[in-house]
Image 1 (tube, rainbow, N blue to C red):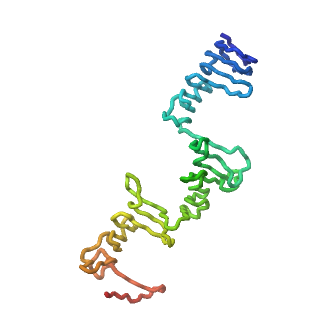
Image 2: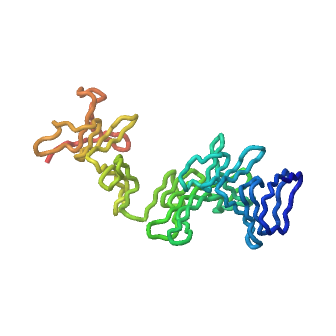
Length: 313
């Protein structure tokens, strides 16, 4: 055994050695083609490759750890997972290759090391690549970008989400959150807090569904634009659509297309054998002088009352 208080340097070592070396000042290997056995303190075996490739390999199946201030900081386990601030994997499925833990919650920080940041400059990104075509190719992206020129205490930023369409070979932006908090879906320049843009006439913009087995075109409710660019709001189920205030329904369109104001269900005596009342007004009082009786009242823009006519054909 050899104890070294400074730095021990091996130069031009070509033979395999297992010296059982312990150092307090560090071990520097400048010789190439050397193999060190147990006792070095960082792995069961280390292989330092030749001049053209200066990588260090750890062929042993054991873990590789790095300590700071006497505590383990980093671990590479036998499944090749990189564990930061934890000595055991939090998730054990094979793709969880990077795992970070702290008492306040694991954090991943990506930064741009540049004091001059202009609009559209990248601040950090996560790229998701596929190897389906035989080599790695970009398939999806989550990116942070400068939303305008940045300066001291002025860091406008945006988040951009991109995916690749079926049959395509490159990513397309799908969603953006701007520095103003606006969300754009299908547009990179949202004009409102939520701006949805589509180039397809007759497209559904929203689809609401309670079908636990998956949404279909025949269930739930939709909001969209038809081929004439008219806004529609449909309930595709055999149910009604309600409009309300103060958490109470004030007007209802039932499954038969009747507009009910002041009620959520049609009254039987509003219909007869040949006719159906498609507009039903209902108050909470039968007293004609009550302020709660259902009324139809018309006035012009100056407040003058005008006549209302009722009739039948």
